[in-house]
Length: 178
Image 1 (cartoon, rainbow, N blue to C red):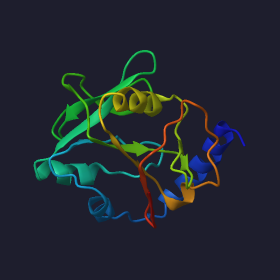
Image 2: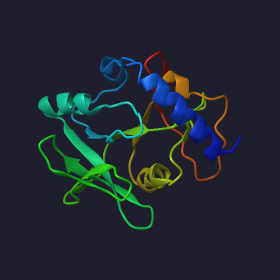
Image 3: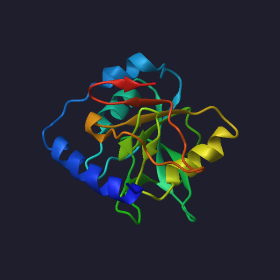
Image 4: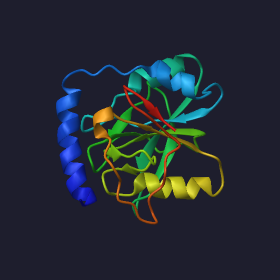
């Protein structure tokens, strides 16, 4: 099955599951990684993705640094410092993003995804933003890549190519893959 077909099928399933108010424990995340003193890269949820904004707000209240992605030209993306008090803008895809004023490299990045497999590969929306960002940053810095998904988004095998980047951990409401 092509990635585009998988995308369409899983987004439909995710929409149905997300409407059933699946609970997600943020404490699963905290048990898996040491966040203290790390710069956390988040995302603004769209299209029935798991919403981590309350989790990021909680981390910010504890003094942790949070950054969010903003897209640039040529399908590039960077992360910028963000606070829950900051104004946001809509990008060309209708996704919220911070003002592009203080670019920063996260130590940990939470990656939204459409589908995933046991090998820790993911299917995104097809723009390659996260894959390009991961490629660029991991050449210079260690970056812990954590996928966040509903368990219903798991498929047998993600079709991959040389551009696809593997995640380090995938956390769902039911289990954790490493």
